[in-house]
Picture 1 (cartoon, helix red, strand yellow):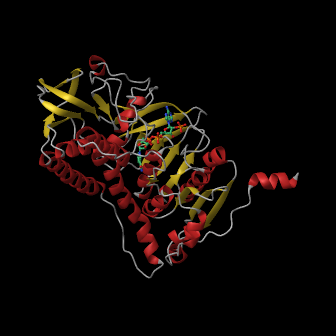
Picture 2 (cartoon, protein in one colour):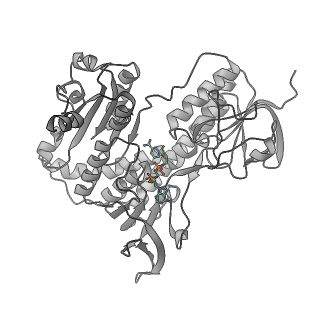
Picture 3 (tube, rainbow, N blue to C red):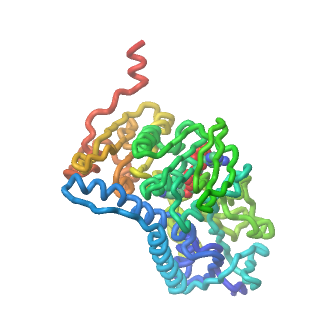
Length: 465
Ligand code: NDP
């Protein structure tokens, strides 16, 4: 008989930790969860969920305008930021309550406070020590920002969700998911937005056509998108209205005035002060916890999942890991997590949906590929008059004819790509796509009606020689 207080102690009640705790408790394990901030972690509180709510809010700005082409007269419009944030907060509190009920309903105990590892079987929370047979570190990540003169004036997404006022002029630094999403949110809600990215094209890691296409669409909407832009300093000034504003100096000596400077420059594992050293758990140079294919750290009874492992920072990945780990530990099964073909969406305006390989990755892996690409004006905008276009792209391995990458920019890209992700996961070929009847009239049907690949740039170059 074990003398431990718990069979399984989960540190962090985010998406991954909560799922692991609930499933383990469901298998009969004695489970505890420690949380020092909020139930549901980043996704529920300062990530996916509030972001999507703000994206909905932002989209109305375009919808009102689009309605006129369909005969509507839309009266005077105004937006109440405080109401949006208050309603968003109410929804988040509702979700926090659901998480609490889910965790406690599963039989797991919640211990409030920052957990520290004392040794490999002991966790301290709020002055109380608990022993556990197995420990799971699921503490997630935290915005990571550079330090430079004036960096104390910047905010991150954590604060952006709780601003008291809607800023009139916003500078957003970064070229990843969060930066492009917030650029769209603030722009549509009426701010002047300048997005600065240090490289030559943002959204590194996404398909290059998608990156270029989104950049063009964002610029058309009026976002001041600047590449190869580096901030050197930020200075705070007091405005005539008594409110502070900021001067953002760029390395090329230009400067921009802003009421809010937001950095979205990545997220780092939140492992500081966790006592990992005391338990003997190794971290890498970024503070992330390396794990093997069974989410084991270097200490046999301590596991880690989700953003703290710095593999794929996506909620559904953490949930899948938590579930599979709890099954493996307490109800051995063959549930696995596949890191291949993980679909994702960027809720930019317009949005991106993607699954599988980029064209460049596919060329590197397979050599010859066929590229099918189509850009079009969504049907709605033929009458709304909006100058917004969509992009769809299939990347096909020429030899096997498997569709190895599927990318989209356009309305509801996430909703559309989620379905196609199943086909990609199953190894669908271009012929399978061709044999699928389209749903007319939709944007999604474009994926099953693309007939001719675009000319191969390498073959064209060879032919020209
Ligand atoms: P990302 O890692 O996606 O992007 C970080 C961006 O900041 C990159 O463009 C990077 O440039 C740039 N950057 C990094 N360091 C600096 C620096 N010192 N100065 C200037 N620029 C810098 O991080 P995010 O913060 O956008 O998001 C964190 C994670 O959260 C994402 O990786 C994603 O997995 C997840 N997420 C997912 C969402 C979704 O699924 N829709 C939504 C939001 C977040 P470079 O490319 O040159 O390195």
